[in-house]
Amino acid sequence: DGKWVTTKGKVFTKWAVSKRYLQFSNQGEIFGHETEGVMMLTYDAKSKQYGSTWFDSMAAYSMRSVGTVEKWTLNLLSD
Image 1 (cartoon, one colour):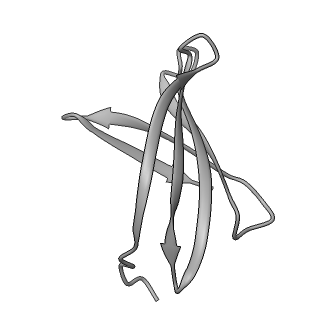
Image 2: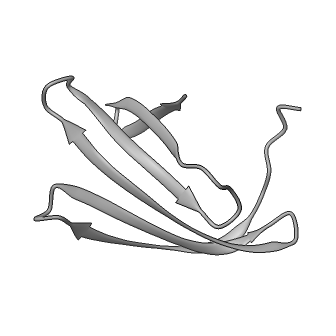
């Protein structure tokens, strides 16, 4: 319905794969359910865009996003 959802949780970040990726590990609660997820973020020099793939414990699929940085803000759009 397009409304924002507020959640509580923790995010841990670390460099991965020879510092080519930034890995975000998430633990939290959404809609009353405990969840965990992982996102890998990188910069694609060929397309000159950032790319990420998200995996979590609530879905049986991954979500891919691409985007750019503008004024210190990472803007990602998913498919």
